[in-house]
Image (cartoon, rainbow, N blue to C red; front, side, top):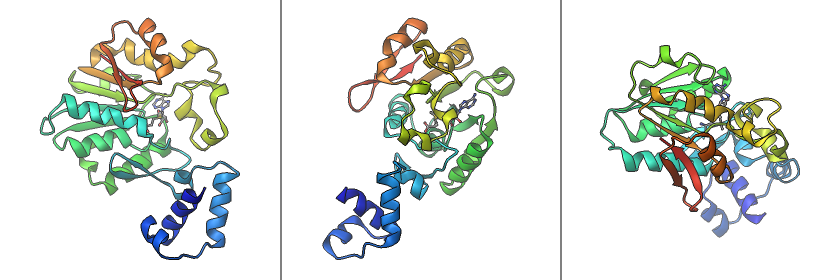
Length: 250
Ligand SMILES: C[S@@+](CC[C@H](N)C(=O)[O-])C[C@H]1O[C@@H](n2cnc3c(N)ncnc32)[C@H](O)[C@@H]1O
């Protein structure tokens, strides 16, 4: 809890944590209210400060966007291992949210072009704002679309690399902390309750896999068997930094 208090003070006072440890600071009522919102209401600090770090960038986030998670950074790591930074690549970031994946790819592959899709117009506005702040707006086309509906008519070629972190939680897995993220970013559809329901968004990608040069999709490690069973033409699963199955690909 002491660390959380330091984080809050650092954000409010715009001072480094080390500076706060070494020199005194005043704990204010504003800080206490934020602390209570965090500890009692379980509101994540990222939602309170509307900011989440992903890779080395700060992304604006709010109630319309999923806060980018550290686990998702492995997708960037994989792209950097498989492709050269100077290549002219095409990426489709499906379900872009804050734009974390697509924007980070744009920054790391400066010659690449990206299509970033989301169904939620408010999330797309935030993704655009993040791309503008991070100076890569010219590389990215933001599109409101229902997952891969009509994608045949949208993609200009078959060289696109699909990257996605699809929603896969079941309704009964939404904990108090998660209620601050939009439901549409967490569950594949209203009423999702069986194991197979987790795969709804994945199977839609699988059906259209021939339209892409490669597909990389984040999974949760517990979904491994399910993914292998229902998407047998996969090429394998990458492990994350904690050695857990994390990215299914083909
Ligand atoms: C798990 S979040 C991933 C967000 C971001 N890519 C990340 O990794 O931080 C899933 C995203 O998919 C979007 N989404 C959900 N259903 C969709 C649909 N039918 N069509 C397009 N996007 C959808 C949500 O709005 C949300 O932004």
